Length: 178
Image (tube, rainbow, N blue to C red; front, side, top):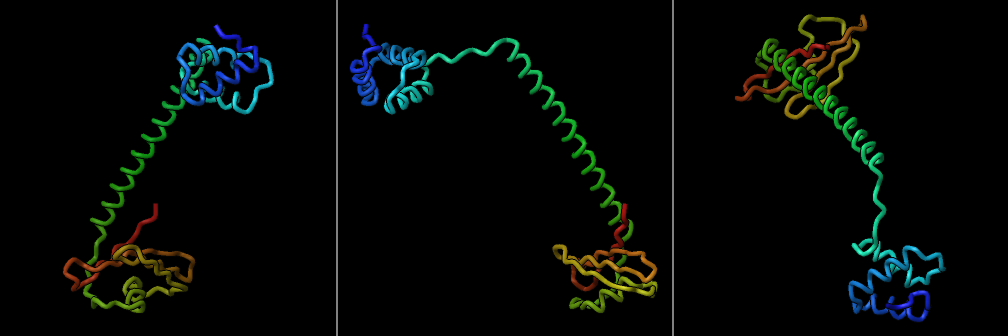
């Protein structure tokens, strides 16, 4: 058995470890010494201690049963909370998709507008009640355009304008605010 309290012996063992020339028994002996020592370690010894900590040579302190139970309880609580949030998101997304599909299916209006529709034509198409309009806002949305019309009385309406599949007409779909 080697005396690792002797600095020269310890340094030789550290060098042998760094060159991968130590046996498992020597590595365990070195690990035990470096774990329990209060001596000031050299840079090489600190490096070896870190390497041994990552290996299976150094014993890791076992956590108490109480800490393990507390960790399990906390993880279970977060998992339950996450699943509730996830379910709420799924249900609300599905409900929104159903409402949007219903609105699009029931409020479609096909009108014949030339394929090269301009801004003036879009604004005239959404103002089919000839209201007093203060401003229009046009926002592209994929192959469609969302036109928001703000009336002088402060009310506003939004419409989705998109070309039909054959390109001969446009569809104007009123957007209903929820």
